[in-house]
Figure 1 (cartoon, rainbow, N blue to C red):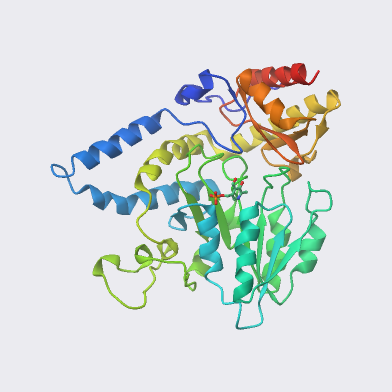
Figure 2: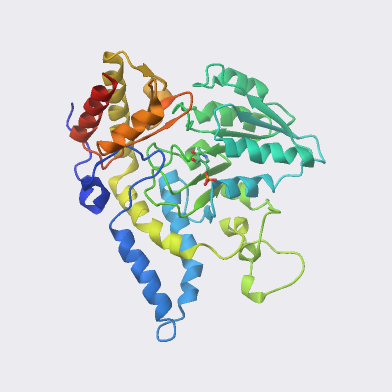
Length: 385
Ligand SMILES: Cc1ncc(COP(=O)(O)O)c(C=O)c1O
């Protein structure tokens, strides 16, 4: 294998890596050592709240700090990302900005490879007048571009799709979709949960309207929060119905009656943020930014290609795109008993998971070494032999 381009993998900063081979970043990234310190600091500041500066004032800055770190990973400007309880709420906030019942734009275009939460949320908008069109995947693995482009018309309010599918790692090229949608006055939301942190995302350059995702997977942040990016010039005109006092322009004025929305991304907030969780996710976000997304993405491309080559050489079924440009950071391998295989791999200290219909899901992140990836594949070959 070629020499790895990321010189410092910072493996020491992830203690779990000494205990086995972690190929699960598409589902749950490992915890950074520094997260211990973050939690300790959080608890100490709470305990010392009488003696120190009022601790709760720092709650105000933490969501902004986390949002700005995520913005950097998304190729978005500071102040454009609002943390959310999770991706599902982020999506629901966006949906709550639309009035489908009045006006001529009722159509929402979604895809057959989206994570199910997307369907649940948009289908729930039908009772408010939304007309949901799902572009099916013919093979359960890929989503062709042409039918998506064909479905976007003057009646379309929103195109909401997974950038990279959790099922097959199929990656959409967002540019033609965004171009077509904007041509007819529609907006585009990408679920980047399976791409942010492992691929290069260019929110500003793509001129995408909304991005949603969360910290659990490639961002090494654990189950801390979701996030919502809104194109800043669009954000100013949106008034989410899923709201709360943190979205108010002057929350500490404690005004009653209808809200006055904050000018920036905070207009998409609700109530008190999950402070301990935000403290835990900061170190992972920092390490990721320092490793650098261009290097991480290039490394991932090389590694996923290598995993695919290994699989094809042994006649295994690869349920992910073979073309680099059409693939995310994960490789799906069809095996006869995926659940049992995952358990046998775990017994050998190789961590991965599986999904019905596509089989094993294996992924490498910047902290993995080429040697351990090869070792895991050899263990898998032994199990399947
Ligand atoms: C692509 C994608 N979108 C959304 C979700 C759901 O995210 P949340 O639990 O934060 O709502 C997942 C979770 O695995 C996912 O993979």
